[in-house]
Amino acid sequence: MYAKSISLITGAMAVVLTLGGCTDKAPPAAAAKPPSVPVAEVVARAVTPFVEYTGSLTAIEQVELRPRVSGYLQSVSVPEGQFVTRGSPLFVIDPRGFQAALNAARARLREAEANALLAQAEHGRAEQLFAKKVVARDRLDTAIASLNAGRAQVEAARAALDTAQLDLSYTRVTAPISGRIDRALVTEGNYVTRGETPLTTIVSVDPLHVYFDVDERTYLHSLAATREHAGSKGDKAAKVMVAMLNDATYARAGRVDFLANAADRKTGTVRVRAVVENPDGRLTPGLFAKVKLDTGAAQTRVLIADHSIGTDQGRRYVLVVGDGDKTQYRPVELGPMADGLRVIEQGLQPGERIVVKGLVRPGMTVTPLAASIEGKPLEAPLTVGGVQ
Image (cartoon, rainbow, N blue to C red):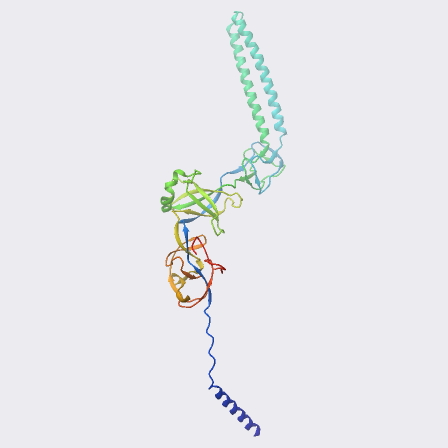
């Protein structure tokens, strides 16, 4: 009973102290600081209008190497997958039989030349005897025929000698062009047939051709006027930029050197070919490539980072940081990509500030954090294309 009374008294005192504390004023809470978000100025720079296509790379020169004479392979020295220069030795066909044929052809030529000398001497004597009326006309005619036959035999023997020399030279198979060589398709000791057995292939790698198909509107607007200059190396040939499918920017320049003589009525496109330099050998025939074709003169356009654009029920917008660092909802009309940035057709002006990224709602007050147009923090004001 005594313990129960002590508990009641203690509880009552706690209530009194609590109520007494309620009469004091609580200290005001500190004001929350606006969230820090990366903010960048909208920039403007000269952008050339263009269209992009997917093309395919092909070698300007491509050779499927086959033997010019038949025989057994004596040696193979193909640097598989490597670059070879024109004239590099690749295969050797056993030359002994061809050397023997060459020696025989030389002997037949000497024999024919000896017979021709004898026929010439007979012709000279026949002419003298006929002039003195010692022999009949038929003797002179026979000598003339023998002389002409001897000369023909010399020419035939000389041609046979040239053929034997060529056949012997063909036993050494060399690279007919400079380029990258494939694997050897035959090995030493195998018999190869003239003009039939494939030995290997070689493709040129610098420069390369890139083929792509342009639509009819682009052809009429940008290429039709340059058709007569296609293939020339002057400034009047249409220019293109080429990149691989995983490249972020276009770094390889090219020029149009061929336009098809007719449009494809099924697809409404015109086949175009351009030449692109490949000094580092990184581009490989057969790969797909991106092709950018300029369609007009350079114009000043507004650019922002693509990831700073939001989507609201199908409409695109950005958050503009206005007076008092308060965000404003701004619909925008998008254009194409240019050098990794998005062209804005309508909705923004150069110099305006936009939120590059962050969880921010329209009407919020933010603490701007200086950033580049790509969203990276800056230690100094951003300057792109002459606009700060």
